[in-house]
Length: 431
Image (cartoon, rainbow, N blue to C red):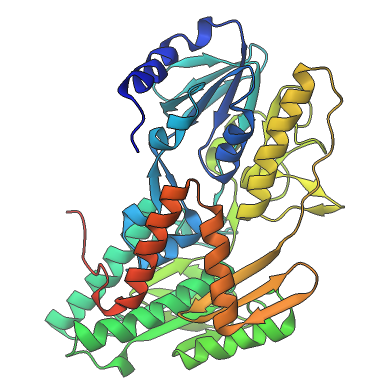
């Protein structure tokens, strides 16, 4: 159902008047899980809310690896922000990128020079790759944090296949290396192995499967370190069953355009290298003049206000939030809960009610290894593996999506692409 055009006009016209209204102004930077959760919590209140993001769409990041491995199309995991905000007439949207923060005057400045005032500011612009000082990692590896990242990885994968089909297989040409044995690395390695199987059977029949390698590198002695040992072992066995070579206890010393150098003088030639070894704060964070902790994350008080500031909140991956004496992990659920909590504290501050500390409710963690194989460590000590865990993973991710129509659309697309895996979107996009 389409919202009336008149409502869209009202929504657009109010943006020009944002600075001239008398209501309290809340500016939210970042339209990820945390930012949209804050919007959903505040929109019925007597605030003027401005949501800012450098893209005009929101991305469902947990499924980006499927875009990168041709399991889903870009449109399956991206949603126009203005479409999401149609049901929130008091919320405006501005496409732009934060450039400066004038804390004393309650102003932010965007890269285009625009200055926007606020009474309360929520920083929710997410994280990026942490390369831990590894030489060449930023220059020659690929991360998967944005839709552009995922498309670039997909293009590179099929470029390597086309190169091999046209000119023959050179050393490392069809070697796909994933660095990092956490959930993202495991999911990417498993999906890459399945993609190779399907693509070679249907599209690149002249290339022997035995000449294609998928290698997962982890510096610790187990993958999925955050999971119980039986789940980690199950994931390891499933990856190997799919043809993934898992290298444990191996740290990356350096990455060059052709090879990854591991500790112990081991070199691996590669065609593409995916960096999934950790997340850190974007370079922008260091320029804002806010206190930072480990990984560059912004230090916050128990109520999620930035340390030293009464009207600035940091939530999601960018915040070093602490709950029950532990740093909150950089996952979707903490971001959703943190965005909601920050919004509730703003309501408390306006009504002179004391703020409350953020308490993260851990509902468990999940990771997929491939089709019909996953691991789930749920609240209450319940561990699931295989098909049952895979279905639980699917249901949870669908519940996280915003809007019934979006849920249905993604479910249909997701099921179709998995049922017809051999007919996935294996195309090279762009120039």
